Length: 119
Image (cartoon, rainbow, N blue to C red; front, side, top):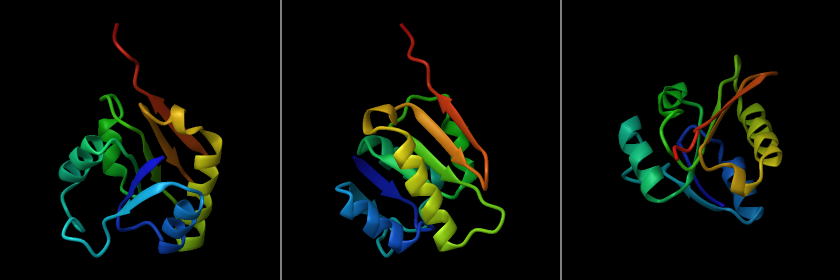
């Protein structure tokens, strides 16, 4: 699966996702690091990637057509907790389920939104 990770996602997660066979674009250390959310969203959609972030601002796009978003929102985040929730979420949904799906993973609960296709 094609994935883009925001700079707040642990490097251990990026490595694990790549080892799992995913095509992961990490914007950390690139000119795109720190880019505005709307520009990151546009790039994510243009490249048809699943976005993984800890930035809750991306929930504003939940009703628009998209290629998937996973948002990690923990009370006391650390790299191990963030990593664990990402791996858990990716294990819950197949690669083909992510387009149009936005998932917010919290400490215990999770919320999901699916864009309904108009006919």
